[in-house]
Length: 283
Length: 264
Image (cartoon, rainbow over all chains, first blue to last red; front, side, top):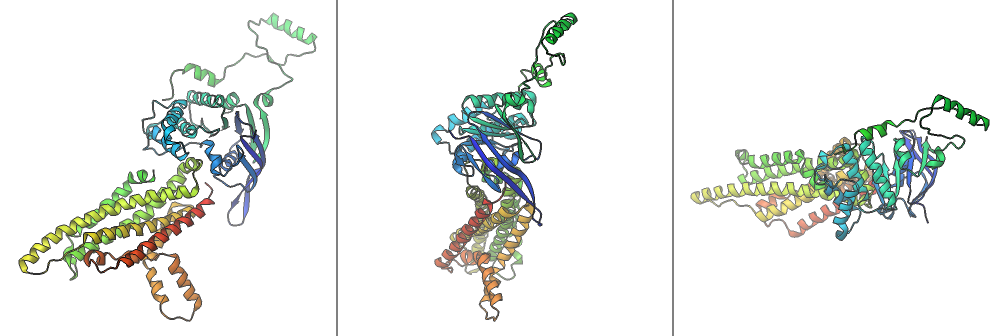
């Protein structure tokens, strides 16, 4: 089976000024994104990930290299028909209602008239936007804009969904909701490429990650593999008294192991926030 | 979508109001007819308003709608769909084309109303004084409206081709406006071409200029169509329509070609 996205030796140079100076945004990048997984594309600002996504979508031409989407050259309509895209900080015509926008995007994506209404409603439901779908987009919050953006990206039931910063500017509750939607899409068999700065969320939802820096790929692999420290172990112990601790450390030392640190487990601030404000949906 | 976006803009309403005010006020200024017939003065006033505000609308609205898609990055969402760049550009054009049609229809209807009202008054006066009553042709006004729509479509296609290559809205508007002026004066180049000259370079430049730029003056046959009905041959109108359609198609193709390589 072909990869969802296959990038081979992609390089992109931007010309700067009249002197012909070039800025290399992407430098000989090669990636194979497998199907049916959530793939995180990470990196600092200006590392070339957005340029890579734009080249993948045919919005910008690469200087050299080859990109295929689901076996089709990336610049073809056939590739885009199988792809859904949510741009960073999406902007939509404010006078449209959410439902009108999703229907318009479905028409552009070639959804047939017979399937139109069911496709629109299914996309709105997955994005949890059914209730607000009749409101003009101009009245939406940031989180709702991202969710309606997600609905327009998936209305034609694409095999590949590319999300550029889907949780930018969204509060943790809304971000968690988007995380759930991403997992639902994976469960439906879709490939999701996620470009985000929220590393906590990427860690939670992604199966694989790639990290870019200065246009180059610096790390790629399964999330569990790249994060695991195989030579360290973490034990969570309840009711540890000072005496028990000394005894445990002695027992471990007898087997050649050494306790490096003993700390209290912490919840993340995001977990605490979500726990406290549960129920106040982003509406 | 482009039409819906354009028709909501205050700029469109503003130009409609200005154009309508100019057409309606022509009756008040008819004493300035410089010895010509009153109906001719009213018609010329209306034609002028339609051309002036229509050209502003065609240039500014086309550039504005194109750059709104680029600057707001809605183009990113749309072009990530299985939609070709040419389809995107042609969609923009048809949106503008419809808004220009609406503009021309409203102003032409108003002009027809004003001309009809004054013609009724003048025919009563003529009956009393035993003179021949002046008249005008509604059919001629209809044909003139179609020609104006076509002229503004040519302008919109040119501006779209410029915008496809331009980096800024301002550049597209300024160059578009200059092209309209050059198109209005293009007949001068054609006129000079008819005169003998020894310089082949001069002649070549003139020839090229007169072919690249459409002659927008050829659409100015309102007087003949509206006031001297029947004096314009159908074939002449056909040639003007054909020329307008060819220039519109050519500039749209050029725009699509340029836009194909643009980085979004």
